[in-house]
Image 1 (cartoon, rainbow, N blue to C red):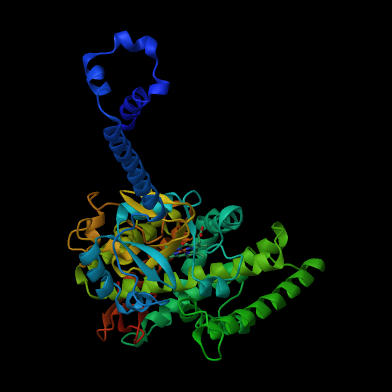
Image 2: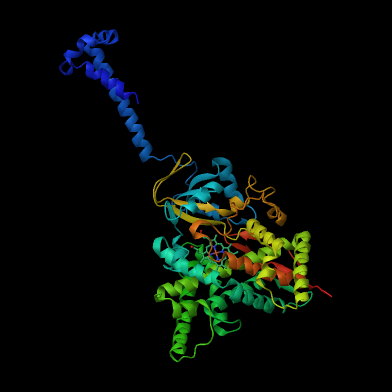
Length: 509
Ligand code: HEM
C-alpha cells in the first residue's frame, strides 16, 4: 500500500534519526521537503495515522461483520420456517421461494428451523456444498430427524462414523442388485398387480406404498407380506414422516411424540426378532437368509444401538421415498398418453424378445434395455421432487463468490429449485421424458438423489424398483386418473386423496 513511502518520508524529518552523512546526496525534492515546518509535519502524521486506523477498522469490521447474502430473518425464533413449509404443488417451487429469489437472488439468508440459514436455489453453489461435505460443510438435520431416526442414523451422522455406517449401507444395497434384488422386486410387483381387477378403482399411493414397504421389509428384516410383524411395523411407519418434519415437542398427541412412540414399538419388535434369530443360530436352524438383519448378526460387529438405527433408517429411506416416486410416475404418465404409449412399446419389445428366448423372468440385460423408462424415471424425479431440500451447516467460515457464510450457519440446499430452474431446463414445469434423450439436459444438475459423499445409497435400487414395476404395469394395464389429486410438497410429497385411479386390463393377444 501507500504506507511504505509515507514512513520513509516521516523518518527523514525526525532530526535525531537523520543520517547526516547522507545529507550531501539529498535530492532537490528532499531539500524542499526539509523546509516544511513541524506543524505541517504533525498534520501529516495525523493524516497518515488516521488513514491507517481507518483501513484497519474497515478490515476488522469486515472480519466481524461478514458480507452475508441479502435476505430477511423473519419473525424471532421461528423466522421464515412456516412460509418455507407452506404447501404447494411439488412440481413448483412455491410462493415463498419465488418471492425470495425475485427479491434477493438465488442465494439468500433467512432464519429457518430456529437458526440463521443460507438458503440456496443455485445449482453451482449446491454442488459446491455437496462436494465439500466433510471439509467445509457437514450434515445438520433438525433435532426432530435425529430424535426419530436415532443418533446412529446414516442420514444424520457426520465424520468417521458417517463413513463407517455409510459403507455398510452402500455395500448392502449395491452388492446383489442383479442376483438378489431384481428377482425379489419382480416377485413383489407381480404380487401387487396380479391382484388388480379390470376396471377397478384403486389408490395409487396405497398400491405404491404396499409394494415398496413389502420390498424393503423383506430386504431389511427378512419379513414376508402378511406376517403379523410386517403389518405391525407398516402401521407404525405411517407416523414417521409427519414426525420427522415437525417441531420436536414431546407433548402428548404431537406428531413428534407419536413418531417417537412408533420408534419404540418398532424397536421392541426388532428386538424380539433378534432374540429369535440368535436362538435359531445357536441351534443351527438358520435357514437361507440374506436380509440386512441377518447380515448384521452374522457378519458385522455392531452395537445394538447402531444396528437398530441402521435397520430403521434403511427401512425409512427406502420405503417412503420410492413409494412417493412410484405414485408420481402414475400421476405424470397418467397425464401424458404419448409417454405411456412409448413406454409400452419399449416393454412390449423387451417382452417379445424374452418370449422368443423362452425366458419368463426379467434379467439384468432386460433392465439395461429400458432406455426410455430410464428417461421417464428421471423426469418423474425431476418434476415431482420427492426430496425438496437437504440440510447442511458450515463447519468453518466459507467465502463463496463475494459472500461470507459464517461458521455454524445452516445451509439449506433446495433441490427442487434446481430441477425447476428455467435457465437449466426448457419448459421446466412440463413432463417431458424426451428431454433426457439428448444430452443438452444437464445431468450434473439432476439432484434428486443428492450428491457428493452423501449421494443416496439406494439410488440404483430405487431406479430398478421403479423400472421393474413400470414394466409389468404398462404391459398389462392402462390407467386413468379419477381426480385432479396433485402431488403437494408438505415439504414431503403427499397426494391428499391417495391418487385415485381406475385400471383397465390390456389384452396382449
Ligand atoms: C426415489 C427414491 C429415493 C430418493 C428420491 C432418495 C433421495 C435421497 C437423497 C436426496 C439423499 C441425500 C440426503 C442428504 O443429502 O442429506 C438420500 C440419502 C440416502 N438414501 Fe435415498 N432416496 C431414494 C431411495 C432410497 C432407497 C430405496 C434407499 C434404500 C434403503 C435409500 C437410502 C438412503 C440412505 C441410506 C441415504 C443416506 C446416505 C448418506 O447419508 O450417506 N434411498 N436419498
